[in-house]
Image (cartoon, rainbow, N blue to C red; front, side):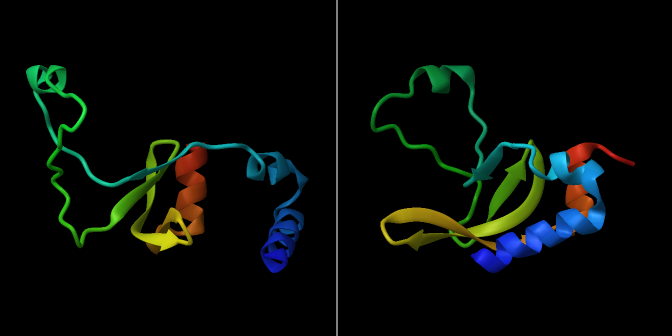
Length: 104
C-alpha cells in the first residue's frame, strides 16, 4: 500500500506541478453489472420483489465507468464480507487521461 502511495508521489514529480491538482481531482466511479430495456409501463409496475432480466451473461465482465467513460472490465469478487471487483482489462493510462480530461 505504501509503495503505491510512493509511486503516486513520484509520478506527480515527474509530470510536473501543473498536473498535480488534476491527479487529486475527485471523480465518480460506477461499476455496471448489466443493462436491460424496459417500457415505461413495466417500470411503473416494479415493486418489492420484482426481478429484472439483464442482457449480461453470468460469465460476462462488468463495466467500470469513470465520469461516464468506460475504462475497464471487471469481475465481481468477495473481499471478506464485502462485494468488490477485480480488474480484468483496462485502457492505457494515456487513453484514460485523455478520456477523463477531454484532451485531444
